[in-house]
Image (cartoon, rainbow, N blue to C red; front, top):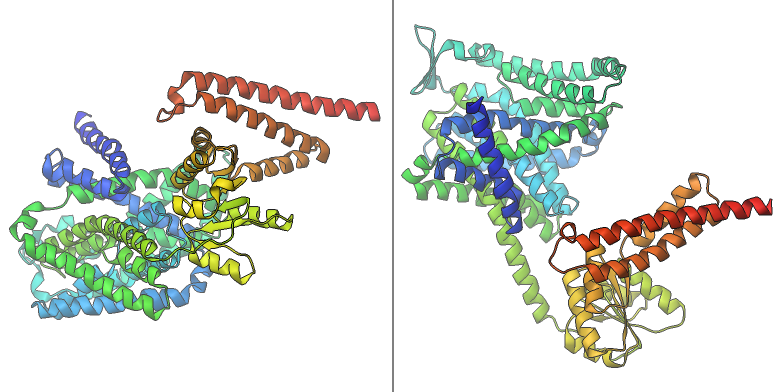
Length: 628
């Protein structure tokens, strides 16, 4: 028991220490996991190389589960609708990258069969790293993010034919059967008992077994899952769905592994087949917690498994090959992005996201070694190049963020701000979704405003509709003075950036102590900060819309429109008083959970709110009774 618990304790310690620290430093969770693996593996030696390989086999279930969840999100009709992007964008990326890498490998002296295999392996990118990074940076719904997802999906599907084709590329001198029944692959000898039954078949047999396993998964998903789920549903036990979800994932992984195929691919196909079933959401909620933890272990295993012995033997060559691969793939992706009319920012995001090799490349490398397609020395180098490219990707994202921030700052400095020649009593700083509504209401009521925003395109669009606005940074003192801050009556702070909003409120309060400041707040903590900075009236972004939604709920539950509106108003008034009281108790820099006075007063105010709302409802019922 001690031998099992010790390594798991080390892995979990690495996760809970390194990952939050990496996120706090702005490195992202993926790089945190990779660095944690490097620290506990090659650096400190807490995990040996063979132990990291064992962990990799276990942690690959994180990738398996992630592909299963991706499959559940994509029903066959959605795949058909995406066919142009899948075949065009994704197919072109795989074809061009495979050809370019294979050509470079041939020039480096490899046989054409081996070069094609290397091209297949390195044409794939990391679904785990890319989706995790894009999700954390909230870039999934951008043009570049959607294009990256399409390419990744094509790559995931392309693994099926790649696994079927790879055995046909085996070089005869690398694979031979010895008289004792063992199989030699180059300098490596593998006992016959260590092979799966498929691996003992000829190349055409492996291909047929691949296609047969895929067909079996599709058949079972279409015809057997619904009766099986109905049988499970009859037991009416919530935990059975978790067991069934794991049963499906583990069972398919076992089937695919037994025939020498990728478990992740099988579960992806199963997810697509099950996407149209009524049990889809149950499967998603059951698998999600396991996926996150196992994906973290997968990245730790990648970091712990980096063979620094090979790296230190030829450091410049390995790093040069890794960077060269990423630059080559990036150039191809930029070209494809331009061909498919992505915006410049989307092109760079596509190239940056998919320039690395991927976890499926590791799977294909291992499979190619088993099939005698690659020699052992080449397989080890490919695994190291893939691992380093996974490590470099988060660093490239960080470098891109740094460059973008520098370029944006330089462009803002170079762009000439508008000269403000119209000073009104009402200044609106920020004209996004929030500020636009405020500005339209005020102007429609007969009052003029002075609008300042740092987004030139927004200002230009406003001018087309006949609304005057000025381009410039509304937090700059010189612009505020030019807008007439000292003589203005009201300042509306509607900027998105929370720190910029605080800076603006603090300056405005000092420059004009009598001005009324109405500020937009992102959340409760931001309310307290704005209150301390000097804002008079503070509006939380989601507060009013949430109140309206709550009123609709009360009406649907049987309350009259009048009673629901009265409850809404009572809640609004109580919340305003409570926020002012709690703002006095709030202490900057101290978590709310460590502020006893704040906690006690918050509890008391919650009890007061419940009592006030119940009294309000009872008063309404008494009024109805008297009137009837």
